[in-house]
Amino acid sequence: MVLPIAMGWRHLLFANWSVDPEVVAARLPDALEVDTDDGRAWLSVVPYLNVDVRPRGVPAAAGVDLPELNLRTYVIRDGEPGVYFFSLDAEGVLGVLGARLFHRLPYYYADIEITGTDRGIAFTSERRHPGAAPAEFVGTYEPVGDAFAPEPGSLAAFLTERYRYYTTARDGTLRYADIDHEPWTLRAATAEIERNTLFEANGFDAPAGTPVCYYSRGVDIASSRNRPWE
Image (cartoon, rainbow, N blue to C red; front, side, top):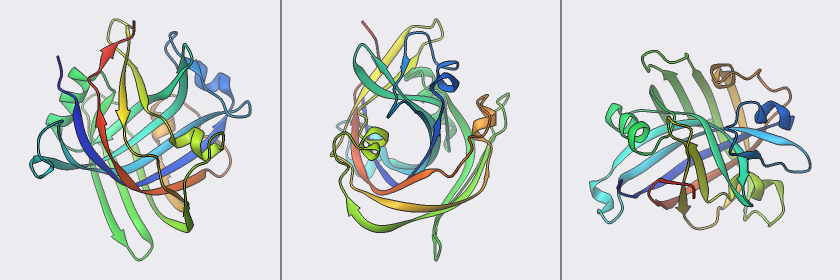
C-alpha cells in the first residue's frame, strides 16, 4: 500500500478556459464523464509551489519543496465530482517517478523556476522528460481585488472546490484519491502568459479567448492513498 501524503500548496494560479464539452470528452477515459458549468467544460492551467512534501504523519520540516504545473479538467463518476489531470510537470526526478509508479499520475520531469517579482509571481517551466511531448510555460501572475470564499454553485467554486482526483492504471482501471483541506480563499488574478504549449502537448488546440483567472496564497492538504474505484 502506498503511503498517503501531506504538503502545502502555495501561490496558485487557476487559469481557466471554457471549451465545448465534446473537446474534453474525446480525451477522457471511458469511465469518466465531463463535468460542466452552464453547459461548458473547462480546461485549467495551474502553476504553483508544493511545500513540505512528505508522507502523512512525518513532520513538515522533513519535507521538500517542489514547483509544479498541471493541465486539468473537471469530471464526474457516479455523482462524485473530481479533477482529471492530462499532465503534471514537476521538478524532482525521484518524486516524478514515484508519482507515476505509485499514484498513477501522468507526471513529467521539468526544469521549473518560480520567483516573486515586482510584477507578481514569475513562473517558467520547460519539460525535460525523456520521450515526452515538449511543453513550455512562461508567465507572470498576481492577485487583484479583495479575498473571497467561493460561494456554492458559483463558477469559482466549480473550478476550485474539488476534493478528489481520478486517474487510470496502465490496464485502464479507474483509480482515485481524496484530498482533504480547508476551503479555498481566492482573489481575482491578472496573468500575462508569454508562452504556453501545454494544450498542444496534450492533443488540444489552444482555446480561444481570455482565461478566467483566480489566485490563492494556498492551503495545506492531506491526500489519501490512491486506490481502485469499486
